Length: 140
Image 1: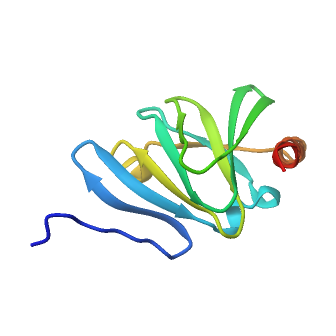
Image 2 (image 1 turned 30 degrees about the vertical axis):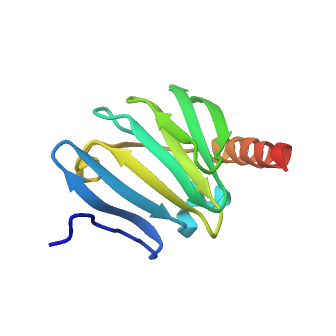
């Protein structure tokens, strides 16, 4: 038995790979649904914060407050080696470039039921896309 375990995820998509009592680590690798022009919804977790760490590529965290149909976005261009936390009960998503790889840490089994979705309107999607593209341009 090895004392030190190693994990490396190369497949696209979301992969919880280390699930222990009370917490889990997952890796989210680029998938077409996470490109800024393809994001259709936001999600929220009612039982956990969600930590994001950029390993590779370009990614932008998207936070939002929702009041009825009124959506106010906040975006953060991720930098490598920075730990980002999305607090419990915060609407969010992540826009990813084709080479993006992100580590996610949250309560265990969050992916099995602690989520709710908010479907974005076409107007919401356009506003979000403009904000994300502007944020990326500002750091280049």
